[in-house]
Picture 1: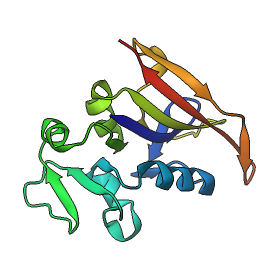
Picture 2: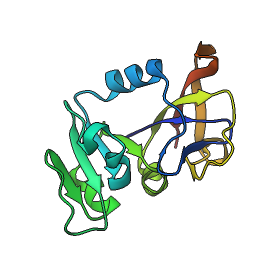
Picture 3: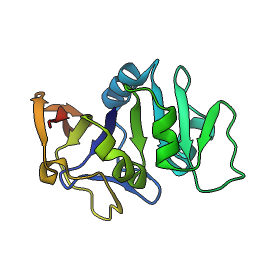
Picture 4: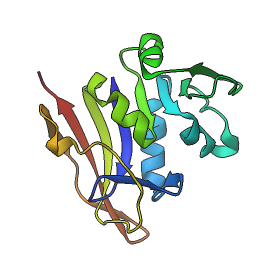
Amino acid sequence: MNLIAIVDENWAIGKDGDQLIYISADLQRFRELTRGHTVILGRKTLATFPGGRPLKGRRNLVLTRDPDFRAEGAEICASPEQALALADPDAFVLGGGSVYHALVDACDTAYLTQVGRAFPGADTWFPDLSRRPGWAAEETGPWLEEDGVPFRYVTWRKRG
């Protein structure tokens, strides 16, 4: 399985229930990589999507502890284990922070967009793969820039 996220220099991914930054090139890459795949995400992450609706062209598995939660076009999962049982081997974990931390050990590839700065006040973090046994950055793209923000694509893989 795969993880996909945009992270800052400190592995931060969010603040106040939203992503730290939106980069149009990253959003396009996200669409290209995840289209046609199963995606696993938390209820709060779903709420950040346009209209709070599941992503089109993907099978959406939404994790929530709320037994009454419903989202048209999504399959609701009460636990990470249930999501794993329903997910395809090539599924993408989309977040948020607790979902990444719960499922990182079930994944072997992480498609990260690394932003070349830190965001003060961040309150949600991605698992720091540089400190997790077996994970290594295998493909690191060149630094790019959009609206003065440096970023690059880094693919991490877990071995063993």
